[in-house]
Length: 445
Image 1 (cartoon, one colour):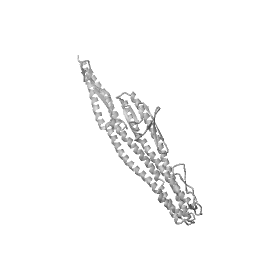
Image 2: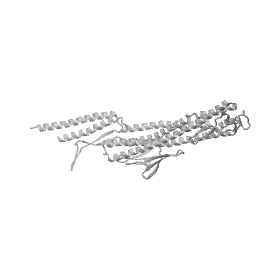
Image 3: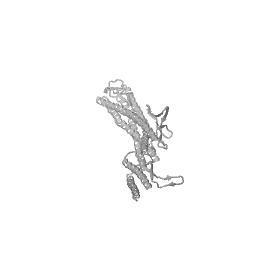
Image 4: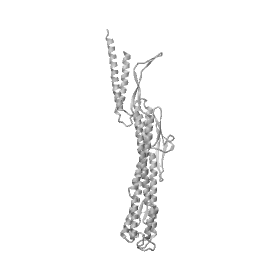
């Protein structure tokens, strides 16, 4: 009877743990990052010098956390690819808004149209005033477009710094989790919770940069960034620090500081890689816009200098370029009479010099250049959006595959709950029968 009691007691304890584990699974079915857990049990056997006696009950050996390392790695890889493309899409869209938002191409067309109208009647002060107004619109459009692109670069710079700060924070958190795993007892709910936190942090890191992960026997992660040969970001309880820098040419660098060691991080995935791509595109767009603005101002000013205004004076510059930002253009002529429509010696009604603007428009192709810039950016944006859609599907499938291996299925948990509840009740009945039998024996006189 004592064997029956001990067997029943061991089963009662085992099923108590199993019920608690199922309850934990059910209560965390909607918790992000939670992995299903099961109670691992073994048969208790008594061993003597000559034999092993089975049938001594059951014992819980630990809490087993469901998971698939390769499925989790695929989630990180696909998430890293998607984050890079999403980052590029975000900033390409901002560049497109900056190039389109101030109607620069339209303003250029209006300016040349106004010059053609004035050429038909060079002495018309109204037409001259209209041309100056159109010129002011061009200067304002160039300045506003340049300021918009400068703001995009400034915002991207802030985003890059924020992303690096997030990566450093995640690295420090992972180091603490690794330290916690060193002290946690394997096979406990506490250790399983730390492993869940570890995987969540690794996924956060992979959204910032591509990571290569190696796990030791107790689940501590060693992480490298930028490929398997990249610098170590986290090793056991030690976390490195990532530092961000950029220059006026659009070159972005990430350095990993680990004690006295300094290594370069070259991300090929995640938001940090998207920042590298986007920064170069923004700087290229600013360079093209600056060149276009300077060519336009120099071209128009050169034509002005070669003609005579309504009073017969040498033409003065119409535009000036500032140095405080990209394509900052101002008007330097505010008198409609100062437009140099006539050639030297041509007289007040001569439009020969002004007609040179039409030739400049055709040869320099200012409007086409801004349209080409906008169209090229729009085409790249459309292509990246298509890639992002495909990568989003790949990532969703990877998440589904991981969750099928480690996620909580409420139908399965409900079945287990009923099964363990019945087993728990049956084990309790075993103990009750054993006690009643023992009492019956003791009552025999």
